[in-house]
Image 1: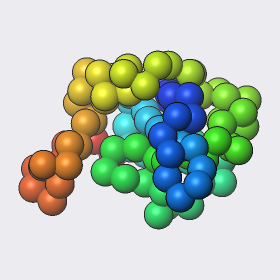
Image 2 (image 1 turned 90 degrees about the horizontal axis):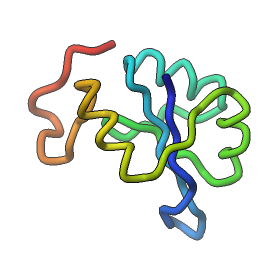
Image 3 (image 1 turned 120 degrees about the vertical axis):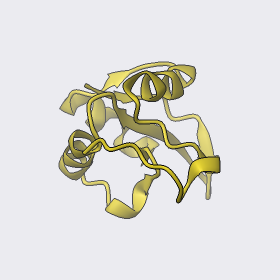
Image 4 (image 1 turned 180 degrees about the horizontal axis):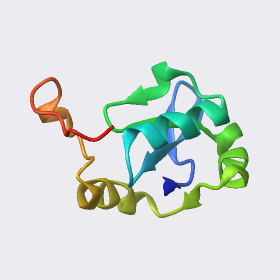
Amino acid sequence: MVYLDPPAWPHRGRLWSHLISDVSYAELHAFAEMLGSPRRAFDRDHYDVPADRFATAVWLGATVVPSREIARLLRDAGLRRPKHLNGRERPAHG
């Protein structure tokens, strides 16, 4: 399943959401492609999605969850890639 938190993260004059999958990175990349998100929007274990694409992501099937749930869902799925591990150990998920 694909999840999205409400757009609340400011950066470069816009608000952003985090888009994740609790199944695989392959599912996440496929969903992001349908949404029109460029691969450069992928950051370790999630996509950064601008507020103007939020409604489209929900229409495509993303489930809205509170921001605090994003990291928990990733950890529970074994897909969390924290910054301090960046470049070291990587989960074997697609």
